Length: 466
Image (cartoon, rainbow, N blue to C red; front, side, top):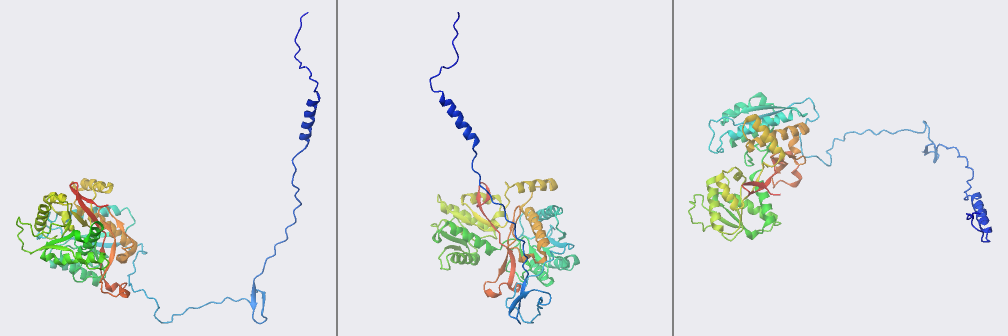
């Protein structure tokens, strides 16, 4: 017989343990977790609407407001006929920006004729003013797609006063909202007088004279004046150097400009007088190879010459000889930006720094696009005047459409950056004017764009100082 192993586990004598486990399991399953008993909700009492009450002065009690005991008092204000305690002395003209049907008219007076071009012009003759005209045309095309309502009347202005007087009689000019130009100093003064009398804005795009007659709040300088350049340069010099590092260089005829620099240094020194070294030569100095008249101990030389390039060249040549191996910095004038390539080697060796109202950054995407468009249109690369004309017409059109003919009063708070020119208009007020009268428009000498770039000559061109 075959024997088979049993698969049942043998009892060990503790059979009550499985039964006990089963009992406990049944007890746990039959019990649940305790639950919170929530009493039945009480009914919400009906909402009673509170009625407004008014005070009855007769009974001395508050009563429910009714139409009979409620009355609305109306105060009727009357003009007392007296002057207000606080008066607006600005006399700012009201702009017409809220008149969507108004088309602003700009008359541009350009010296485009080749005849009678004086020696005070650049070596390009009138070419740079043709470039300005081309830039204006490109700017006008740019704003065609905008909501600006502007008509531009371009006039070829001869250099004589008779030609200007005839143009000012033209009804298109006499009814302009803004006159842009002219160029010559005598014509600027006469146009400023005309603009003041006819209450027409006038913007000077090329010259920045603040010493002409007939100045008024209607006269706008689109380029900073020479005093403003001095202020900017003096501030830069003092951020880098001490007073005893500086020497002012120039001829006797530039003494007034040296004084202006010295006064600005004193202002930056909290009004404490400062002694700045000077190297001054006579106006007819013959600039021989003897350069001992220049101070050789300083590290910063401010050359206050800007009218005659030959004189500037001689000063720079002597400064370069004088310094030998010593590193010096020369502070120059804004007109140096237009000097020929003959100056470039000296500019580089002397680390020349100037200030300028215009700076064309050839690496800027906007400048690259403008150059391309200009070349496609005119088969020529633009001079800096083309950028200036483009920026000016867009800025002036924008300000006219936003603020009307009174935009010159808002230029200090509404700035603009073009592709070559920044605009920040500020009111020029005579320093001796009492503080309380400085908001009066009659005390504003003119309006000036005081935005400037600081440029240092490096890598064969002027670059903006960051």
